[in-house]
Image (cartoon, rainbow, N blue to C red; front, side):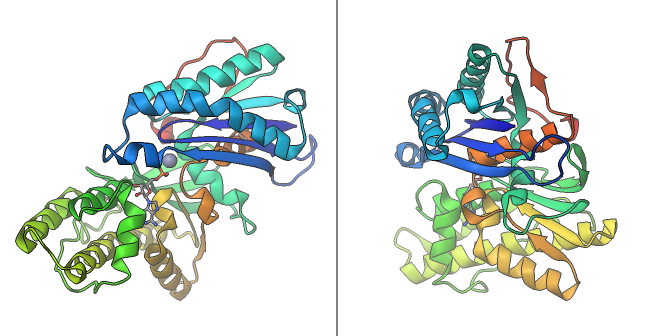
Amino acid sequence: MRVLGFESSCDETGVALVELPPAGQPGMPKLLAQALHSQIAMHQAYGGVVPELASRDHIRRVLPLSREVLAQAQLGLHDVDVIAYTEGPGLAGALLVGAGVAVSLAAALGKPAVGVHHLEGHLLSPFLSADPPEFPFVALLVSGGHTQLMRVDEVGQYEILGETIDDAAGEAFDKSAKLLGLPYPGGPHLSKLAEQGRADAFELPRPLLHSGKPDFSFAGLKTAVLTQVKKLGDAPSEQQRADLAASTQAAIVEVLVKKSLLALKSTGLKRLVVAGGVGANALLRAELNAACMKRGVRVHYPELSLCTDNGAMIAMAAAMRLQRGMARLREDGGFGVRPRWDLSAA
Ligand code: KG4
Ligand code: ZN
């Protein structure tokens, strides 16, 4: 069975084709082909995602990308058995593009369409790596819009242990980067600038670090970065900017690592899965690896290219649900999107 998956929740159009092992046989679904178009360059001029432009660009890209995926796999539309799409959460107009195309295609082919939770896609993306995790595990989900620690016992069994009470980790990266005059999305740019800086140059807050719970708050950090940027005045030196970037990154990473360890300790689990765009951060990976090694905890990441949004994770999440007989099949030809949708309710 083959699943064609569409991702269009924000500023990346992703399409991918995944193949499941024959019915009744064990084994992981396999990625056959994928294609991605990032809208980052288009939104950069505005300093952030412009929803209307995002939707229009998804419309332009989705069919050419689909053709590219099928050509890569040397297959045709009739070789596809299920069409999956990101049902939410995300930008309503952007989600509607993927949902509309997926459901129409499914109706035309007489095949079922399946709605997928975007965060479940991120969460299960490490199963596409060469060294996939095993259930159960603690998941640190760190994206542009979400920061959550979860206990994951199986596909669909997600217990939220803690989450952010205000900004997400990716948002903290992006907003601080903007204050430093870096382009959107700021995370990778800030992390690059930080390579030249000293992490102890600025004293920045680590909100809720000692709360004793796996919860997060990053809004205060952004305010502290703003205060430092103002103090540096109109013409900060390259070194000062790099120092502030390094100090900001260190503050975010320290909180993420400490809270992950807390969640591992409270659940007694010895496996951590990191997913979402911020999971690409090199310092976060290095610090988590070191801390987990000391405690005999195995850490799993998606491949670097699958940390940020992509179609492969959507096709994979649908495939893993199909294997377990729990996919959200829509055979009625109708479709809806859920711009706001809790993963624990998925
Ligand atoms: O998962 P994702 O692609 O989109 C959402 O579902 O939100 O995550 C995007 C976020 C952005 O905030 C981006 O700045 C951040 O991931 N990000 C990074 C890095 N690469 C992406 N943050 C820090 N370091 C990175 N290397
Ligand atoms: Zn995402």
